[in-house]
Length: 124
Image (cartoon, rainbow, N blue to C red; front, side, top):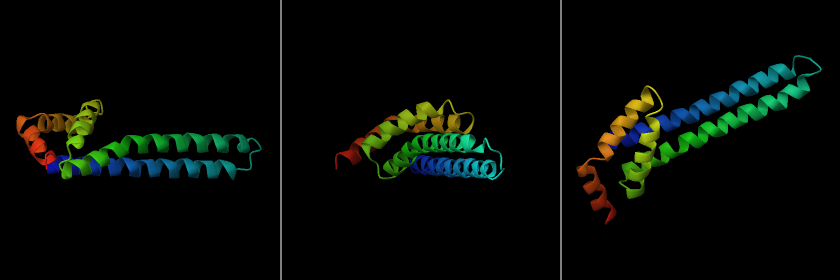
């Protein structure tokens, strides 16, 4: 259980790092286009900013639930089990790492022992 929580946290932070890289790349491209001296550049720079910002926000929105679920699993919160089951099912589509994490997550979280563990911890 601890390993699954840590994996979700690590992959969530890697996603957040990827979002930061996307933002930096699009910002760099917009800076280069803006400094090119092309009279049409004033049209392209805001478009690049919106695209880069949108992709960054999308990646962050997709990464945040994994981080939250990971911390919830480490503290045995009953809602974290449900959230992680949903995330594991969605991760099956992310070949190859997400698929492996999804299979492992479903295998761990749908076992009877895990259900009893969360029920016992949630009753406290």
